[in-house]
View 1: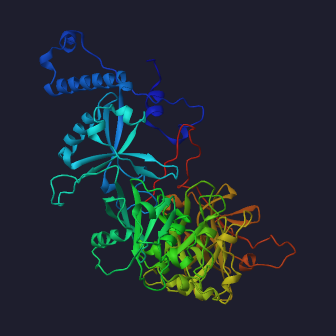
View 2: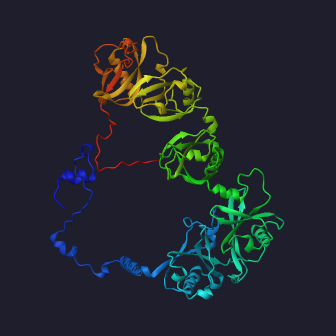
View 3: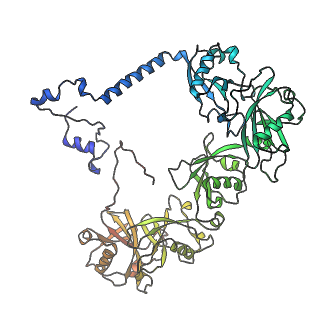
Length: 624
């Protein structure tokens, strides 16, 4: 702690005026409280704390924290003596849509921490207690990875190997993953059926639905190796509730994304299935199918999996949107994947406009036309390599086909009192004119009470206001925001025409007025038009500008009216004379950059932003 000035203690810690902030300012981020104690009460305030002064809740909390810390220390010291056993249940197989039985990254494995030297019988005792299920209704199947990269269960006999240590059976794997088979409560039997590891085999079954393009897990069973493949069919039909005369096709899942059809139903399981082992998967489907199916067979389905990719769809209009992710085939056409997205969003797919990423950037690029004839793969090539595949979208108020016959036009709408302005997006016909644009704007804007209800288009470059193109000008001749360059930042503004400006006499003219301070380039605020009449005293003009802007008398005294010509500022006094309309009318010159003179209103910018920021400050962005 050190002595400091009042300014350092208050402004530098609790904020002050903007002008007090500078790069040289020394800022503090720490806070202290200095407590003064009177000498006469020092013994009372600083007396020793006895156990009765401590609340019982705090004592219990501190004791619990000490106990937990001792447990953590004990676990750290004995970490090498323990291992993790990950338990997989059959319910994790449901909903799995690719090769194998489950995905390690997507399922929530049950984790048990056991001593390495514990016996398998002791592990089974832990599982019996954890799942509240008798031992005769549980069977443990260690999981191993085959040379085909598939994970399959192996048989384990608890009676023969129950005294072996867990780490020995796990072959030193840590963590060790096992499949725990549990008897279904509605099976009607008291224990799992006997499994003979010499003559029996464990098989898992999946059903493929070509209408939904999905795999459905339908259970498992023990079967004798000498049993005919055809004898499996009645059991499979019963599992899915089909009649016994339903014709099916069987497949064996042999490798990642690879299935082989089983043709001979008269052969035994051992002969018909290649390298038959416990945990093999049989997939079946109906022989008779509807026409025009996209993926009619499970072979088509697995072939399509090779083209599957996760795509994240992000709302273009919400910068804070994290989006949603769908798994789609890269071979899908525009119409196919758009329907999937529309179904996910519960929105008409043809009322959504999509945008591909800019090349190697995660920002929206060009819009996709509804007639796009490429595949999803052609769209995703614009994403960054090895990054999340993204497509941006915005929900429309019209059909995308109708939108594509229109021209998106961004402009600014300014209120009649010149106090508020907002950006609006209009969709006039591509082959329309400025009048078409104004008619479209009239449907969105709110007219003033008693106004003319007529609109006009103006151009703004910087804060300089110019009259816009005539109503018969084609929209294709107007420069959109996407077509602008750094040297030509033009903005279009739509405003309601005041009643007194609807019809101008021959000796009247609309002249732009710009707000500025000291320098002609230091302009700000909302520029506007003022009607001037030839011979009108400048004193009268000043009064009309004051009334138009509703500026208080005291504040108006600080305003100065000037005529701005190129880089020159000519200030006007009230007794300086009258308006000469011809001075403010465009004249043909050899200098294309020369523009007609216009009015400038010099005053302090009350809405001026902070002139400088501390290097310690960080911007805060708030998205509604």
